[in-house]
Image (cartoon, rainbow, N blue to C red; front, top):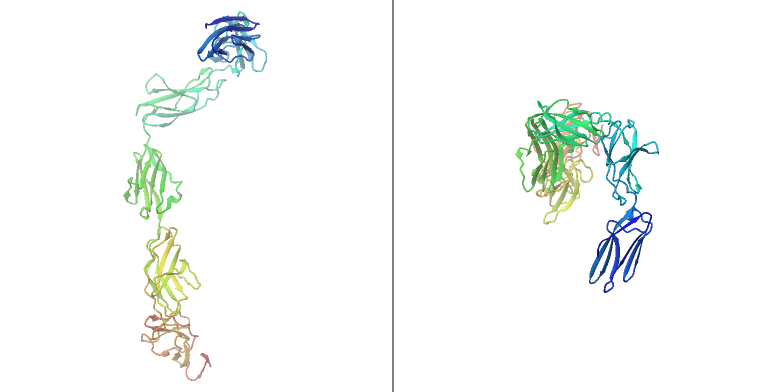
Length: 598
């Protein structure tokens, strides 16, 4: 099959007919090479011919129509080139340049569809944005460019262009936004040197005071070495800042910037002074504001990170130390440093990682050191022994111990006290919440003292103590020695007789001897108004439950108390007696139930 040419003059119909044959009967398809078939296209096909009809065709129906037949033996195609003789289509998009206060230059492309006839010329029109009527600027423009003059300054105009051939004037192409007749913008304001390196300069400026009547489309940067008369382009940008790179270190440069709009470039704005291209000298510093009180706390076994923003010019050298030891990267320790931050990470932290971490920054401008304290919390060490046992009675005793030498980096929250009877291996809980503060119940605690009650008389006990902090429990202390029982307290001393310089006292034996024979008694006395107790006897103990105190002062009152001893120690003192005044024999007294009557 071959290509056929078909011309139609408006208004008329397009009718394409073609006969075909083949075995088996082929399928027949119509298509358009450069577009979809018009919805107005009517196709009639039989086993031997096909017809395509487009009624009342227009310029858009022009183009190449392709007819294709196909069966299992192959396929064949024929192309019909249809020219619709009509007015031209719209020209291509309109652009403009060289905008001034009174003129503008328009440019456009030829129409895609020329209507089957050569374009003779173009018609250029304008209208003020506030009006609806168009004014012909040129009706015989033979080129695709035209300068519109005599514009009102500051007035926004719409423009449109139409093509014309032998069949008439085609559809126009119109600008969608008005264009204002303008002039060049004012120069940018205040060109500043923001920063320098050894090979670049960062510039910044402000927008011009006025844009000349059309928007600023960009800025042109220019430079020259000091002493030269030739300005060269340094770059273009739409932003208000620009970095000029590739400069010579220690060379001195001058810079200027121009603003650009539709009318052209503004006058240049030069920097206030020239600049020497070099790395500035800025003392190093670090920002520790994100680390509260410069303190980091973590549990043993976890990972902690010290991440600190840094600055300085030139970029400072970074050194990390833990106390006096310089840190290096290991399997647990990593150090990552960039020009603006340094990060120290320690994995699987241990108690030994606690301490002061020193970050030292150094460059040619100076040296600065910053400190971060890290506390790695672990379980406390065992309490400091030995556990002391005192004030043993038939059913109680007092335990005393010292705090652990290592608290694990966290305050001791409480102690756990346990007991074990002689002949057994099992430990029994006495108290799991012994605080370092005072508690007065059955278990009376004085800081690190605990009174244990409810013990069985005659039974031997051992005790151990475990310290507790936020990270867990310490190892238990070493077991105490088996407890030894002391006697119970004797009764309150009672007056047997007095003289002007002596008082005779007696008391009852303890109700419990601690499981051992009593060895004697210790008597103490004090004067009225004094807090100082002292012994009136010169021997270590008194064998009997009575004693006469001599050498006393007339008109002076005294109080007395007594304790019993056995091989395990001394009991607690009895309660104090009432105040007693020695009197001579002129005042006879009778002892009734331990009270003195005159």
